[in-house]
Length: 266
Image 1 (tube, rainbow, N blue to C red):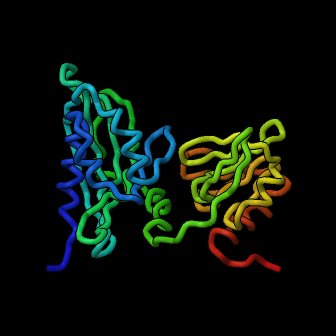
Image 2 (cartoon, helix red, strand yellow):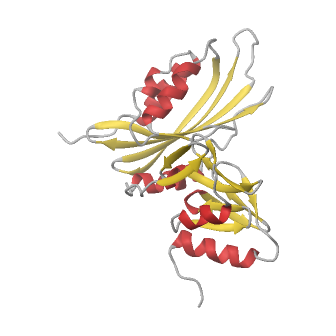
Image 3 (cartoon, one colour):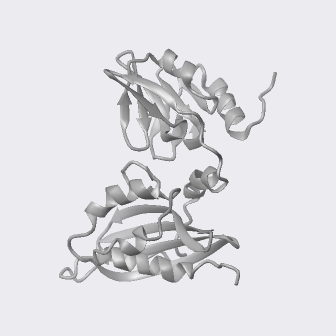
């Protein structure tokens, strides 16, 4: 019998309700090696082991009551499906909800198992509030972020980053951007910030072609660029980095060329 995705709406509802009851197991049990967790105000976590390690110790100590909930499925293919959700929750003794949680779940059939390859969460603290009449909004940034992961692009060779007495070996796709601070390059990664012994120019010389210098003090990984406007670049993490006025058009052209794979005008 051909493997099929589980009922993703019911699975999302189970994961959400269990979380607010203090039980992380339904979520953790559906993780895999390429799962991603994106939360409001926090670093992105990549890989089931990293997510389990970080989140297993932060399960809710006190249950929250779900006052309203909506779930909407968005089929992508026979092996991939998204669910968006809005959930209104609050403490049981308050008599009303005080948090509006918005979730994007992205599921993929891996072998014969339904795995959660992305969970994106955002929260609004409002009291009182109601769910929007037109239903949950799809987090498009979440899909762009996992695009390469779903295509299973192979990892690149690791970077050797000298830092004090140590040399750290880091996959390029784990680096969001590099910043020059006090003449030293800092690597802002998925799970940490590395203070290196390199200058920004030395760092740029070792970075692969998907990185683009947008400022004398900033180099970004174009995998995580969401947009560019006068005069800043926005990343999928929510951070914005400056682009100088005098080089804005060149930076814009360089980013477009590297992100789309199309050569710019000669």
